[in-house]
Image (cartoon, rainbow, N blue to C red; front, side):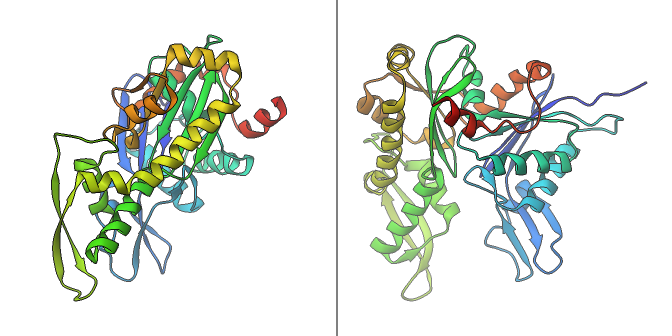
Length: 343
């Protein structure tokens, strides 16, 4: 009997990779981290096990993020990591699985080629590309086949993507490198400047998740964090308030607001009219910061909602697109060039 492997949808983000298998749902959710031996170039660990090594490795081992700002930074490590993730969820079969890869709307032709090649090298029979904004809209339950405008804001770890979707494609988009990681870095800088304490990015991320907000939140107050005193070099604990984080987040939030307004300015008037009716959909881990949706709603005057499962939304949307794989074109699509030609 000939065994066909299930088609898979892959949402490979800067901080987390999700794999959706047809008829099974999300089968893998792992950090996009690999641990590599610096001297041999051999990959030692991937995902959760590699993430635990961040900042804790000996001299010969380095833990890295092979995806930066939504695109491939280290080609070899990306293909090896992807192969490892796919192998965990496939059995031996004669035919390899077809992969549907989520990519940013602002991706260039060269970056598209890298994604396709890495997926083929990882064991895919055919590779299909899908813009993350379209996948997010599908995951949010939006019927993207109609000539009706919907705005999607996806705030991941490395990039914030603002896109207007209509008729199954992206009409207008802007991608900026200010996202979840920028909030973490802002916290690290602030704590060092104000308290003379050096903390790691993981500590900053935990602080952001627990008391981070961009509008006053009556339910949270202070949080104690531990780090290294810059002057003495000894461990030191300090308390940071949610009101302080509001000030810290002002700069990255301003850049995200600017990207939203720029996208709205370039959107055709008919679609802007649709947006005022349909509202704005937010996804990605960064969208979970308290008050961000209300701030965007106040700034644009358009109703803004965060999807139920903000982190997995794109993976579920791409999973729905697996049923349409036979109607899609495989290989490179060069989204950005198509959009420029249309303009």
